[in-house]
Image (cartoon, rainbow over all chains, first blue to last red; front, side, top):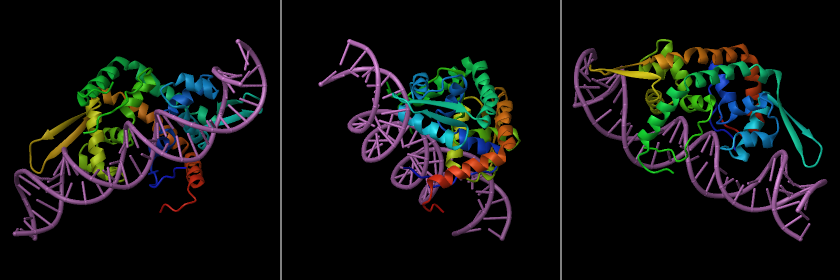
Length: 126
Length: 126
DNA sequence: ACAATAGGGGAATAATTTATCCCTATATGA
DNA sequence: TCATATAGGGATAAATTATTCCCCTATTGT
């Protein structure tokens, strides 16, 4: 298992938020769980660009940070459901704000993102 | 220069936000620039945990994404000032929300973060 | 002549994160 | 018997991100 070699900086609130939210899919995981997609396979279908493996790992971290809980039903085939904790739920409005900004500026964002992608890649990358 | 090999997913607003904000120091850079710390050396002093190099790289990306502008004064020793664009300024309330959540739950966050750090590292890492 | 200041950039390397591949287990349906 | 669905983990490879080290510019002060 991988162990961090450098300790994170934890000065202000922003550092702390970064520590629990920094991960490519974490915000989306929280968002989808909140939206009622609680089972791993559902989440994987919702986020097809992420590998199964990394979703499990990030879910584990969210669980370690007490933003979600995992309930395992002792049935076959196995059934698992994730839910937001009270703590995790308190993050939802914050993520909502983030998503709203993204939606509000969607066109602008697509423009600047594709501009800077083209900028660095004249080379072929599929 | 490094060129991305996998294209980012850009489905919803959250994906787009992620694309421009995902970077270890970007949010803090925006925050400090907004707070009036506009010169590179100031920013480096404010964020001593980041290397000078990576701050320059992330500032460049923020500039490419049109969230900040860079003004170079033709003097010696050189003087550079970053400012938020109108677009970048629109992000400040969002970052504020994020930071407020971090501040509100500071104690709780420190607790869960250090718990999960200890959890994985029984090994020495300074 | 040399150091300090202010700002940067290239190359190599280290650290971290994500992806791929393959394996486990049980029950159901073809 | 074999495929499918469900959930997950280990090992390894690849991709990405960040750090370190060294170099360059020009001026002012010692």
